Amino acid sequence: MNSATTGDPPAFGWSAYAERVNGRFAMIGLAAVLIIEVVSRDTFVHWAGLVS
Image 1 (cartoon, helix red, strand yellow):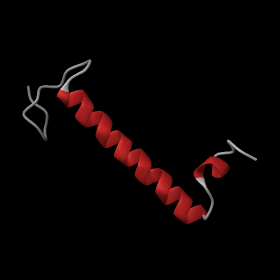
Image 2 (cartoon, helix red, strand yellow; image 1 turned 45 degrees about the horizontal axis):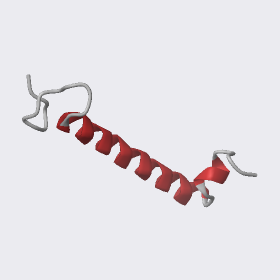
Image 3 (cartoon, one colour; image 1 turned 60 degrees about the vertical axis):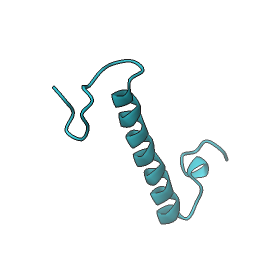
């Protein structure tokens, strides 16, 4: 069984498939933070209440 976007089989641990998936989630997270900052016109750490 291969993944939908690559020829790599899904696997746990340090594999090319896992690294690709982690990278995609990181890009989604970064885009979400940037969207929050643009919409709220405030930094993410202040918006999230991590600093006062």
